[in-house]
Length: 314
Ligand code: T6T
Image (cartoon, rainbow, N blue to C red; front, side):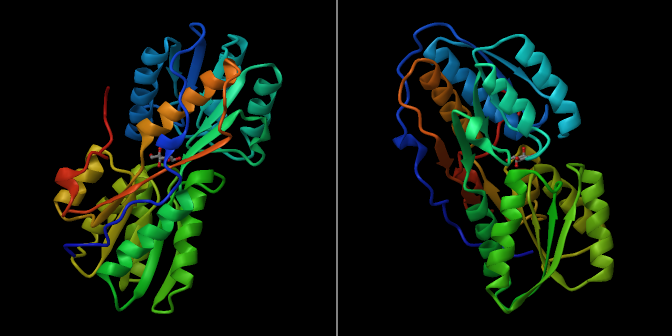
């Protein structure tokens, strides 16, 4: 496997430039609804939110469904809304399915802040905080290109259509790949956030196209399964994997050489900024409607010095 890939940081409006309240005027009751429970990305986000809640003097309650699935997230939203929190921070699991429940929550007077993902018409939201997902997808292509300058076939393993983040990552990757005639794009396949499905998709794709040189896995679970699939197919340095996210398993795969680069997001920062915006909205302070947080490309060369690895607990 290749030893180095392009190393750069995401260029996006630094969220540190966004004003944060120094405290809340009262102990607000705020709910954080994760995209899915047990995902180190959302655990790290929760850690950022909890630390900021302590600093501001507000109370946060966190919940997440067992799967990244709007049919499981909607009942959680319904029950949270009926408990009448002051604000909701949420990563909606589908652009369409979560639109109405969240617009209704906002119409009922709850401040809604979208963290990570968004919906098709987020005008109901007080603020939206997310990574530069299109830019991250393009950076994933650059990392593959650095390892395979002669080009070749590319595959993308994503989650499900209708998830704003992973769709934007696919878009950024596809646009960058289309602009480079040395590469040919085999297409995107959807793993439903299930590593076993991702592994099966990858082994099948490699059977059909054994000369694939690069696979972009658009989130943590897609990357986990992609690593397994490539290992099962017995591929070596002729193929590189770039994964979005930097959970402990992804870092392990990077260190053992299965994965060549990770696009690490700043989930704790997304959470911190999201809570700041909720409190600002509740207190009538300055609210920034849209905040883009950065990302970092992690490779074997900089993994030991990187502080971007996700937490599995706070
Ligand atoms: O990649 C993150 C998140 O940004 C995405 O919306 C869903 O998947 C993750 O939570 C990683 O599993």
